[in-house]
Image (tube, rainbow, N blue to C red; front, top):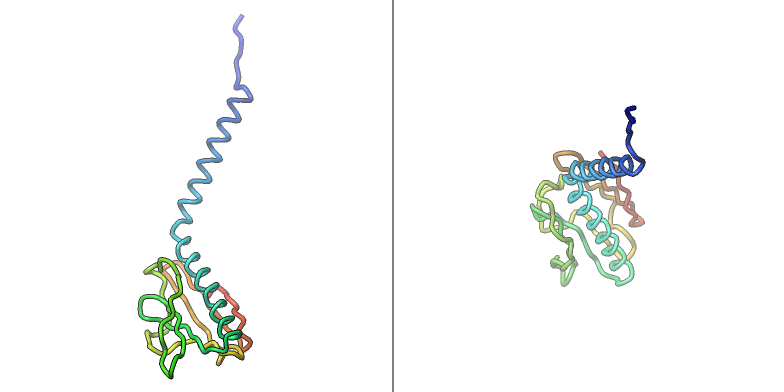
Length: 144
């Protein structure tokens, strides 16, 4: 008499665990190209909000400009824009602004809000994001 043997519950669970682990790793690998771009934009959005708050509560005029390779924050001191040290971390070289490099800021934060409504467009090979600042200093982000 021949006994038929199947898989045990433990063997099935081990196979499912390995398949789940491989799926998780493959999804993380596929998304790894977008992660640095999104993280950089999140850091920049957070720093921008912080600069707007500093202008509002500190009575200062601050701004955001593009230096050709990365964004930087500036503060108006004695009628001149001076770079502010703000830690944005590594800026992905593929992430670019759609406005030209300038010593003047594209976006100006004042004690009463944003000097003028501004739209900032960020783009990278796989996508783009539009930032819209309203006069009250609120940032709205949307994919383009």
